[in-house]
Length: 315
Ligand code: GLV
Ligand code: MG
Image 1 (cartoon, helix red, strand yellow):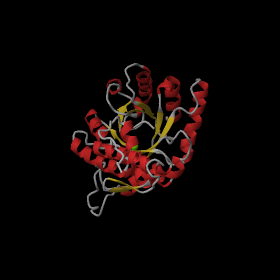
Image 2 (image 1 turned 45 degrees about the vertical axis):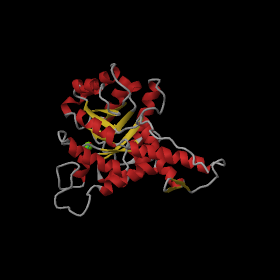
Image 3 (image 1 turned 90 degrees about the vertical axis):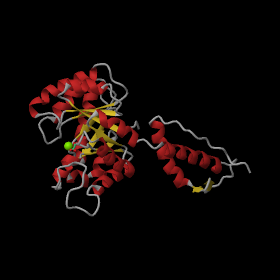
Image 4 (image 1 turned 60 degrees about the horizontal axis):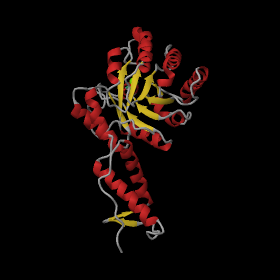
């Protein structure tokens, strides 16, 4: 799967910001028809998004459209408009406030009809369910497995905090008075576990204090450490930070590649066909190789080059 370390949120109502997004180094960009667009501006935003997707200037960003959620009157028309208008230039639809597999399946069916009608390859456009309320979190496994189009699980912290009545208005920061741990741990871990259980990417949501890049780095660093694949960015200043934080450190990447080489050598017949072997002072086995494969794959996808090579021990 392509990396989604930084996922840039762009209001569909702003042609200027859509134009600017094309040249920014985010791994993914989503053009928003939902909460960043006022109700009166929804129809115009659809036209902006279609024009933006079809006009030149994009790099190799993953291009996503966030439609309105299925409880509104806008969802079907959003999907029909953007897929008929720019389907070949859309990689995925971000579906907010998902509460059940049925909502993912409804989108899947609609996408299939539109792809067939427009001669687009059936099944190419992915679905990214956004988990933003208690019911969505309780039903996360059925949502994650609602069909092969599902590519990621995306956390929506602002809506989520509102949905559970969490007593803070600062997204990503701990609610005052809760001093015994991380108030988000259960939610984040549930999303991460569902993503890993079903082979999807786990994406953290926005950090709203856009001028405080250090605070963004701390928030992103926490979910990156947990195992998340990427995070939303709301401003160009957050993009480089996200790309760096969700890419493995060079030393970890080098170490992972060394583990893989050493493991391959020692498990081969020429290397003695052993399962648990030494790399320097470290004992490695199949489980170490599994961890190393994850880091190596992320490093390679992010374009890291190794700076150390493995030399088989002389005996
Ligand atoms: C994003 O959609 C959020 O609710 O945080
Ligand atoms: Mg939301």
